Length: 159
Image (cartoon, rainbow, N blue to C red):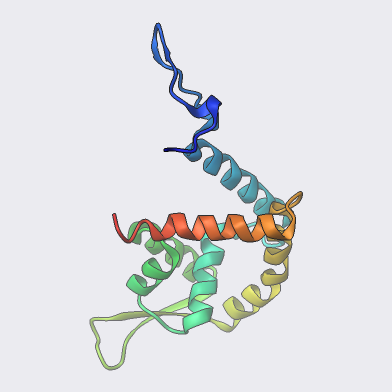
């Protein structure tokens, strides 16, 4: 038997099931993401840096020079968006794009010294953003939410 709270149950009415969009998982996830993104924009010291750009920079920092497809895989950002992000970060001289010496067809993306410095400078702010996102959560709630979000993301692999 399903464990759904009464306000989430579809109760028939004259117009069909009673559907409260504000109690649906997609809406709540979107609102939580909007809140987190607003915190990122308020607290991050580089006003030109977006959350997606920061994730790409961190991904490259973590693995070193890598292909765009590796960045797509690691960040879960679609390839067209990653291309645009890389171009913008390249324009800011935070990334360099070059051909792989052993396979000229393969393009490798790596951080410049400026890119590495920016990531190092921004990481403490990223920790603060996460802390503020979790305001009002006790340690068990934080752990539970992260566990459940990871579990929800794992569901993508079986889809």
